[in-house]
Amino acid sequence: MSSVAAGAPGTTAARKPAPRSARRRLGAVLQGVALALGLVLMIGGTALIGVSYHFFKVPTGSMRPGIDPGDTLAGRPVSGSSVGRGDVVVFQDTAWEQDTLVKRVVGVGGDTVVCCDAQQRITVNGTPIDEPYLAPAGLAPPIPFNVTVPAGRLFVLGDNRTGSQDSRVHLGLASGTVPDSAVQARVEATVWPPSRIGMHAPTTAFATLGRPTAGRPGSLETEFWAAVAGAALILLTSLIGSVAGLARRIAGRR
Image 1: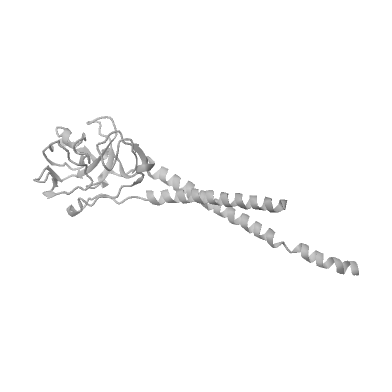
Image 2 (image 1 turned 120 degrees about the vertical axis):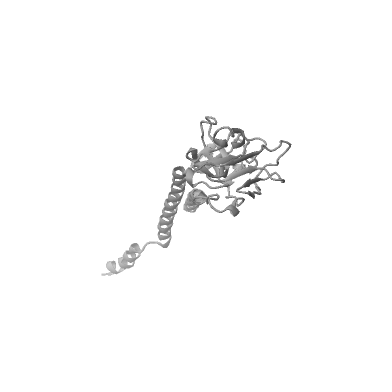
């Protein structure tokens, strides 16, 4: 009887998990959940960007100062018929050249685009347009034009008006316009180099003309930060797990 009584406390203690062991198991579960969440965010955000956006490298300085040669742009594929005034678009018109080009839309089907008023501004449907994104004009005189854009076509200019091969130099080809079907994407961000990473906010320069104006950005920024947050969560969780494991090994040696 005495042996049974003596063993009872020991049996009860064996069934009760040690507090430290329980904490370790809880920590392992939380670490696993954090790693899984991080993976979902990182892989999901990256996959959505890859599916929703195309990437283009800019060969020239025709869109300075907002876009430099060598910049890599993220563009969201859109229908050319949905493009508005002020949108920066990537397009290819083989009547101009074989290369993919990046320009800003200043006129859509039905618009009359004229250069220039007394302050060297273009006018669209008689309204002068103040364009805050333009590079300084420099010494080159403006190229005069007066174009009514045919339906289903776009009139496009570079922001660097002194160094852009755009609608002004192709006036003999459909009045310098390009078919809206030539549009491949609307530019939403610069993604490389790191010093120039950033979103391209839609301009309000053409807002007084009403629709169609520059389109609203897609979900690129949200997807990017989801991927970054996932990667950071994975890194932080792994670091905490490594530090905790090291601490346990040191405590065990003592």
